[in-house]
Structure formats: C-alpha cells, structure tokens
Image (tube, rainbow, N blue to C red; front, side):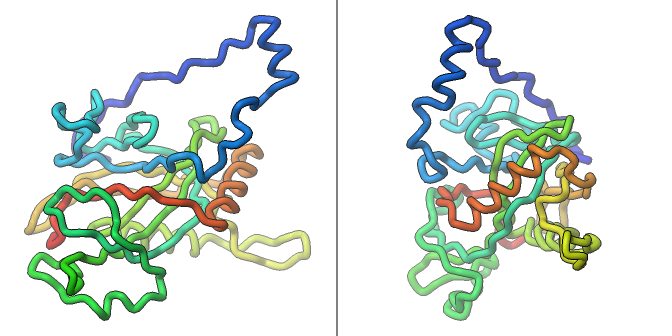
Length: 265
C-alpha cells in the first residue's frame, strides 16, 4: 500500500447521447464514420506512470500540471486520468519488450531519446560507468535499459477500458523482472489438441498499486504487482489478444521519462 494519501479522480467521461431517433439511425448506417483512417500509427500511446515528488504533474507552473495529482498516484498521460496508488489499477499484460534507450544528458529535463537499440545489442560494451551510475557513451549521452509492458486496463467489473504502456527502468527494473517471473510461473494449460502449453500473458489480470521505498541513498515511488486472477470477460480477452497482435507488429513509442529519481539510488 502507498505510504501517501492518494486521491482518485472523480472525473467521468461523458456518455454519448444517442437517444435521438436521428442518432440511432446514424449509428446503424455510419458507425465509426470519420475514424476510418485513424490507426495505431496516428494515435498517441498513453503512458501509465507513477507520480513521484518531482513529477511535473505536481507542479502548478509546469505545462504538464494536473489538478489533484499527488505523490504515489498513477496517471494516464493522454487522458490525464488519476488513479489512487492504494487501490491501484487492474490490467492485463499483453506484450513485453526490452531495449536499450540512448538519452542525451540534459540534467533532469529529458525530452526525447536519441536512439534505440535491441535487446541483443552490444551497446553497453561501448559505455563507461559514471560516478552517478549512468552507462555513458563517448558522445556524452547515456544508455538506459528499459522494460516495456504493454497493458490493457480493465474496469472493476472485468470489462476492457483503455490500452497503455508502462515503462520500467532503474529502480523499477526488479519489479519488471518479478512481473515477468510471475507470468512465466503460472501453470500450463491444456489446449484443444491436449497439449499443455504456457498461458498467454493476456489470460490473466494483475493489480498494480504503489508504495514508497527507500534505501540509504534516498526514496522513490515504486510499483507493487499482484496477480488478481484469470480474465473472465470474453470482450476483454478478445481486446487484449488484438492489442498483443498490434504490439507485436510494432508500435511507435513517443518516449517520456518514467523516473525522476537519481541514477545512483
């Protein structure tokens, strides 16, 4: 449980007004009209991120300020919806990816990555460890090992909500490894051919909450991950499997800095 008191947003998205006869007719004839050319490539991938003491969402003078955002909460960076860190979120992990991200050193104000390297890259062999534990390249940039967890948020009743991306690096690397280990450790299931196979990651729901953690060098907000059970809603399972296929084909990630803790913690 989070050691800070978090407030959950009470904002509710307006429901479409379809009670008018003309609206009903238009839905029958033109459902989805105007959205034909909008694909995954044309949409921003929401980051589902932790809010820490230094997060810009907490600073009134910052362009990313969000009313009500507080340390220990969780935020959708596109919708700006806030979630209580104590209650957390329910989500289905749909796809996992690891890569090395090259960042330009700009103090604490990172804007965008300079380059990306696949998991099998030897880029770390070209770096030197700095006093603050950054893997520095000769050009002055640094490399950060980054874990991507593509998820489908689900509602309390098990129905699908929106998709999003959780990035885990630095202090959250151990959390990512633990989550992957939890998924791999789930019992195998029998398929139609009678063969026991590993469960797809999107067969299960997890509850992600937050907590404050610390060591002798400082403190930070961290993910707490618990298995919440199997997916029992057919639409959720279908949506999650389709998101998995989309992610596997490749999605563009407009990166944001997930953590604001020092590198040497």
